[in-house]
Image (cartoon, rainbow, N blue to C red; front, side, top):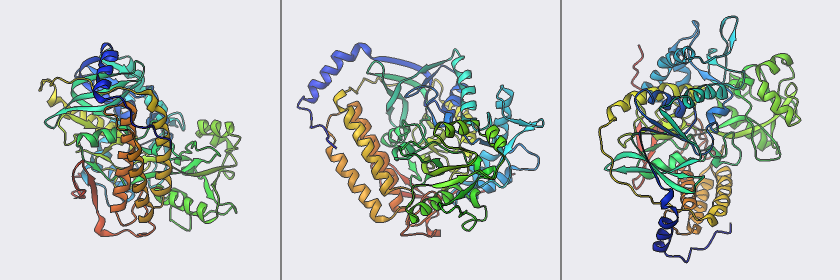
Length: 552
């Protein structure tokens, strides 16, 4: 990989050089709330936190660069009289393959409709049909309960709506191009974050009574992904290094249908396209899903993704076809305008058929929280995809992610009120410096890890490949120069940390369940009905599933 050799400059000299050149750039910011991440979870919590205090909203790139912004599918919530929270509960539990915590799911399905109602009352416009909300059907759902906005642009529409609320709020300060690189803590309490200012090239310190990490998932650690390239698990590594519990990391959801191109870029084809009746066909033009699952193309995502992967592998092809030729072209263009235009840009006739292959899409596990978003570190909250609250189990039910941001984001803000003005912050000094010569090192390592994860810990796994992946990570880590508190070196270690969390958990779970498939253990095993939890400097542990129903 061409790693740089260890610097001949002493750590003492580097620290002196950092203070001399960057001290005048150092900024200390004090807020009531710090929200790190600008996806829907971050925007929504910032909006509600501003009711109670001054808020700093930090984002690594631009405010529109998030999984939420690019989400095509929709938001799952019960809004139709022919539906019920109990039915949404059942669909979520079934998709979660026995690993969902019932109280968390109960909260999601019962509080979700009220959050949607509040959003509409605040001015959000969802698609309508004959005077009522237009509801779609997606994989794993047995009722039409998926709300959309702008057809296939739901994420962009909802996120843009929340951005408009945030940027016009005088109590919210937005810091773009600020990458969080450390959590400020003492005695198991969080006091804020360290952030690297990518414009000034210096460290900023943010102090607050409450800190929220809403930094998204880690799917861009794989080669083919539907996520922005920045979604590489920063928040996961931060929380793990701070001592948080990390749960269920073996479960990575691969979206079944992303456009296949000669490049590694994967543009997502919403599950709603299959919900409207599109068929998956192989190179011979034959549908293969009806023989595999009773819901055919609308089977849960893990089953569809694994089926496509096997079809591709068994026939030595790079993709299968998503056929829409039997559907009304006018309906397709109206229902999926953004996908239609993207296909057209790529020279693909969406009204005929689209070449598709699975791509890493969603981190099912994450930082373990309670149903108020609290972690095991006081005053540190986690919301959105980064959280593992027990909702998703082994496999996320389609379109449950955006509603999770709303439901648990609001609950976390309410829980945070008890921390306002309760503790004086210790004094924190800057730690990090940047050596630009390490930038290429980081880029090379990121590319190599994406290869390792795709080949050794992808859709279908086995012990030999997973062990091989761990050895490869160890080898890469040994090649990283030892330069303490250097920005790019820290990013390299973060990538390896995230990759290890996934692989170690996948090795431990010797069965196949949801988003985790082991070809050496192809069946589900009731002995593995538990959460796998990892914590820094501690042995891996397992925690029972909470199946105590609290539904009315």
